[in-house]
Length: 183
Image 1 (tube, rainbow, N blue to C red):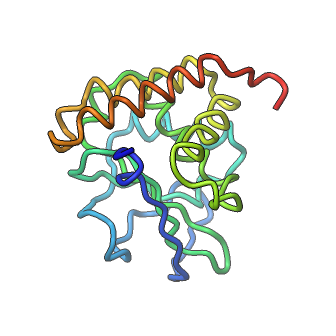
Image 2 (image 1 turned 120 degrees about the horizontal axis):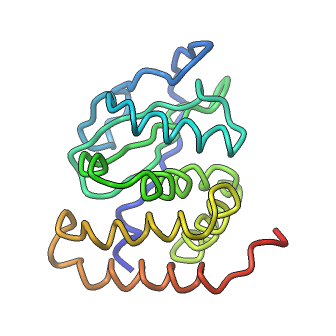
Image 3 (image 1 turned 90 degrees about the vertical axis):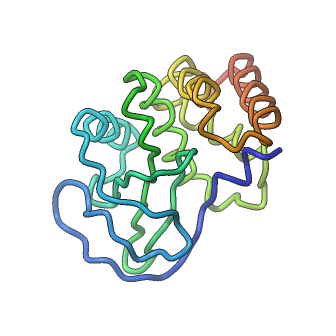
């Protein structure tokens, strides 16, 4: 499914200076990421900060970056001495509701505890990540984020619309029918 080709996770051992409080500045150390800049939208920063806290990660382990690209992504930009996660957010997310942003952010952050299971690539990994995100913010919120990507499908390459919608609808259906209370 084409959606998976757009969500990427790149591991590297670049060193980044970590500040003791708040988010890290959006660095430009990764040559493989789309052009990006510091996310300055305070509303989105606050929403993502709450999700990071629900997931029990330190804010100073994350960079929040804005991209002129079509899909939210997360990149690991440093592993030693501590992992630093760069969250790349499309500019159109500024028009999304709080629950949509929260759901998409929780999904991206949900990749972190599943990194050791990266052999389960593809839609299975995305479904597992959706499930992890739902533990933090609830199924309805994650579903709202997935549906927002469908609503903003015009930002994706036209030739991929059908396959992206198919994958997102599959993930919505799977999450809606999954019992997450016992995880």
